[in-house]
Length: 238
Image 1 (tube, rainbow, N blue to C red):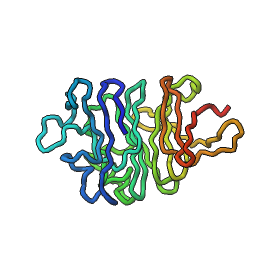
Image 2: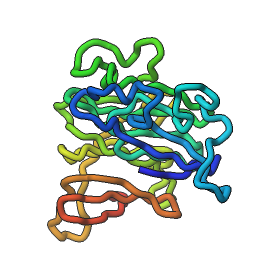
Image 3: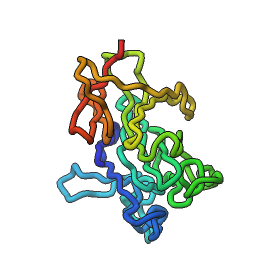
Image 4: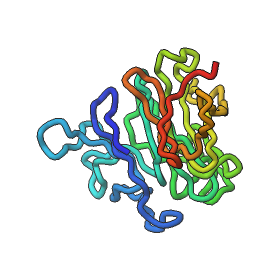
């Protein structure tokens, strides 16, 4: 995925680790590789691109200066809160945990989200607590295979149609079709809620494989059902 940062105007680029199971080439932890990373570049100056001032590894030898954060496996959809500038990343796990990573808008970058040593709060493959090891930034939330198998990162709701959702982050799981939300307070998730999706209008349609979310210019949220090629707008159930 690619997206421009709401505050700095730089282009952010998410890359997977590029390897087989368990990142056999160690790309996600290798700062000389662009894989398994979130990159940040400056594209608005007439050149192909430049390294923005303030990138955490700028000027370091043997390091790719485009890197903004690393230790990612398959960052399937990231987004910025258009009000606060906070960053959310849905990172698909290997075989045990799915995770949502969080970066506060005040961050200077350089976070290491742990893959391929950590998988969510656990160690790769499940078990242990590698996600909280020194040097790693643990996810703000993770979940196991009893709830889903492939996280789809979403957006913070900043629309006006459903004011009670203001500041609430929505995400889903592609395999299980489940949808959750939470808000961040003091760096922790609160009000974690699972939602039952119902298609309005009595069409009998169902939302099955949520492959992506989106937001419009007014901050209203949408989701894509990969199975039937449909786009849905999220509205109040009342």
